[in-house]
Figure 1 (cartoon, helix red, strand yellow):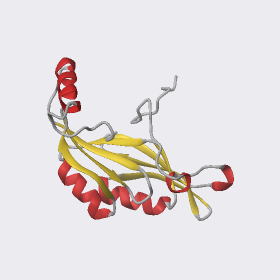
Figure 2: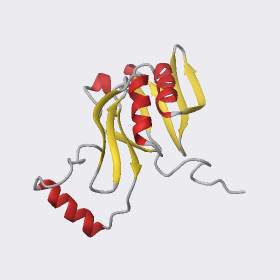
Figure 3: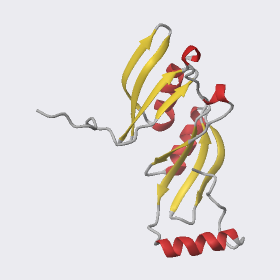
Figure 4: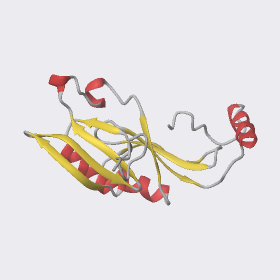
Length: 162
């Protein structure tokens, strides 16, 4: 019997976050984004590997291990990437994440490409964009809207959101 090269319930790309304080991060992601913990493998007083489900996606997580040069954004001077989380109600999820301890960077706004999106930084230095897809925008219309926005005639840019 052959084994599927991508495990069941996983996607081709799975984010793997390194944070300072993984146990607290797991609790935050549960409160902020409704995450369900699937697996936790302790290594001494740290978490060597954890997996959680957010929506229909798996996110992996571990504590920092400086002795192996495994460092999170707080130790590296900031996040080098962002996670985009689609949800049915971006405004409610954004508020829930802020209530759970996230810092609002940009509140949810309608964007030229058809999403309503806001950007947060979690207490562990990871950057999250949360969004609800509101409109399917054809590429030519998206380009027109982006050009109008760049000229100052439309809604705020979302280029830095993701």
